[in-house]
Length: 514
Ligand code: HXC
Image (cartoon, rainbow, N blue to C red; front, side, top):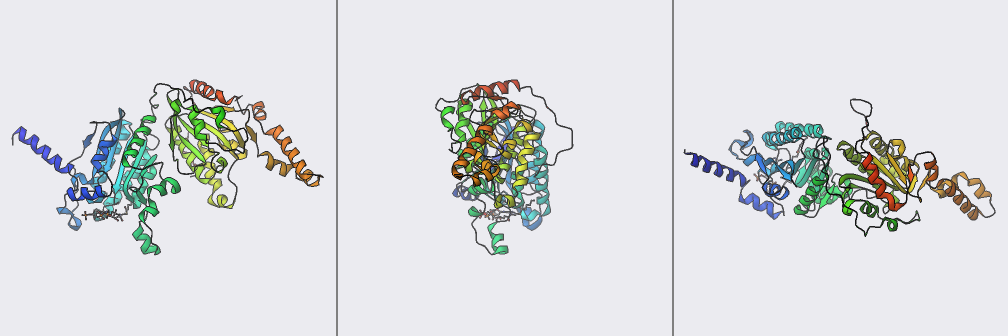
């Protein structure tokens, strides 16, 4: 064969593989409102940057008639490319080929690109669309999953790992996304569950739709397995590109610094937070009043909304915001918000992203439900995460900082570097009303006018303790600042902590209250 013919032959071979599972399977994929694996990669990456590897890999299974089955690319596409100029590694399962099922060679391709990502210190993006372990391959398919999980764990805290669920992700397959840092789901398209509707019907005799069991909303709102929810694949890819632009490529580098910008004028910090501590407000407006361009990328927006976490920039540098949300349950901490906050702190700490804590909470949520759900175990995760983290940490106490909430939300005692309080901050063991009821119980009961006496005692307690000055007099608060100076104080604190170098005692690893 001449050289030209060989080149033509190569092109033909590649085109055949590019067709995936064939016209009929592609049509079925489209009918479900889904893009193909190849279209997804092209849509997500910068134009003409995708470089594919292992296109000619074939499975070698001969059981159950598989020897006659050609599975282009073995049902998965792997390669590298870039997002906003930043290199990334990527794989996308191709549902049109044997339902994107994971056989031995399919898994080998995925683990190969995972190894590249880890060696090159670049983010890994995995697009999941698969019927799970390839049933015909038995234990070889299971071995493949195990190899993926091991690498997910190895890469954790070294490179950012992003999972995109764009179809079914069932059985043990869900555990790779669960081990990664950020899970993206798309309404009506994503389905994640350990045991599917058929198994539930057989075992439990219950009829439940896949959507109700593990659709996108379920994981974004209820289970907390998903971090970003989108209405379309296109919107999802836009979210991933935005997130990548905020993150460092690996734990040995910082995130890209961009041109500093001021927050938008419409977010006036003085007007956002009411003086009355019982009045709610949206803490996201405070974030927007502090972040460059008022640009805030919220993480887990729909889950445990009593806490707000996410990325923004201050003076062009990526920071992580960790906040109570007075708009929901007065911003209390509970099991879910503790998990949400603790995991985010650990992500920021692993990837050298300074943490800014905006605090306004009445404490941990009381009640039998929370106690029995393990609020002690879950709440401890926040204490652990703040204490072990060594990135620059800046805490702003805006209003309430009561009890365990005061300690947990980035207090000096857990080694925040800078703690600033606004003049209206109330730092106390508990709210003045509750405190007066307990410590002045007798006086109130015995008073001629108990209502009046109660109010006197509440005012007395508030006057003495519900302010920032007792904490400031002990040095627990570094400075009491006007709300409108907050960004200035954060900028200065970030500036001086750019070279922060703090070590914790050497150990194999700690034992966080998982
Ligand atoms: C082999 C599979 C497959 C699988 C789908 N296919 N899943 N082949 N192994 N796991 C094939 C189908 O045979 C079919 O092939 C093609 O993919 C498309 O599948 P359909 O069923 O036609 O598609 P659809 O109707 O959209 O249903 C999708 C589905 C269903 C809901 C995912 O296919 C399904 O329930 N699959 C099995 C899911 C499952 O139980 N997986 C194992 C989980 S256990 P043809 O040739 O007809 O086009 C597991 C353990 C991992 O994963 C443990 C790790 C620790």
